[in-house]
Image (tube, rainbow over all chains, first blue to last red; front, side, top):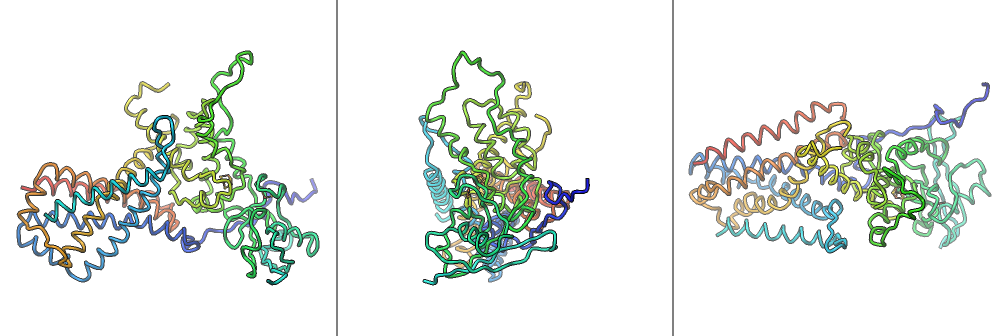
Length: 137
Length: 247
Length: 117
Ligand code: SF4
Ligand code: FES
């Protein structure tokens, strides 16, 4: 076996490229993806923020007022505005992608994906309206 | 419009180089030329040592996939005119080892593909005398989209999950598994599920969605994987709630 | 089935939590994080809030919303850590941090809601 097996399957001189740690900066679609995934951290923050609110309500009028004041501090408003951006990003991307996983058949026909997305947006609007009415009236 | 265009082509000659380098070629610009035409011009007229794969020149064989300005593309379907007058950068598909120049090593995919059994699996073949397996146009429509795959591997080049974890089964293989699962003649979905319900199967996918964006055949592998997850989850709950129902 | 994994369960929780988070969180955050603090509308009084949260249905809603959103976030954040930072080898630690965190916060949710008068 004197032949140098240059093109065999296990040729050791393949060049392997490594994925950069910052691969998600390489393409705008990757960046959007990683932002979408990062929304998870902001959802967790929202839950903590809400739980603190519930605790304040439970503890009494003073702590509830303190909670409201805390939420009105500039720092917290900025944090929550950023969180709002991510939460809406989550909702929009979620509803847009939902039809991909769910293929709905109705009377033996595939329901077009857009309809499913619209139904999702509709449900979003209704849920938001109901919650807003409960809290504002 | 200028009558030439420059091509920045990645070269890798394993016998003399340890790392890929870039070589620039100037080729005539014709508005009906695709990137592959320019590469063939280089090979025929300028530098016969340049290596790349191609065959059909019509988006069917799936062998001419390369990165064109950073995007995975079929070079036989990517027009120079879309990039002119700027130079065009041609690289081998990412996420695969480079064998030479623009040629990638794809045996990883070739080994994965048969694991999902991309053929019709029957528990019992019908005897020939009973005739063919018939299918309505609606039944065909269920899987037709997934059957258009030409194994060009653009989706693997676009998939960061595959880049990060080469054990991941990858978009095209899962879409092809789904193609047979949705075929009314097939009975192999259980066997495929066993292979694909592993972490390296469907669960590694984080739905980046780029595979679908780059697929030249509109196969939508990302959608196939999400559908697969849904049915895998339902299977899981069924076998959990009704363990006696399993064969 | 050959090997049993709990990925399907985690994914189902992730998906259900994703739907719930997408439907309900934006409006609540808009109100409590932006509209009330900026004084664009009056925040509900403490009595009103107590009445609301005290209702069994609201409690159930809050519990489901919080735990599901947490499990959703944990699952997604786990994969973000895997891929974004390429630290899959810290698998166990990441899982402990993500799912453990979600479980601890869920228990806190339960305790809080339990003690609402
Ligand atoms: S799914 Fe599309 S991109 Fe992937 S190999 Fe098949 S044809 Fe190519
Ligand atoms: S040469 Fe066959 S697909 Fe491009």
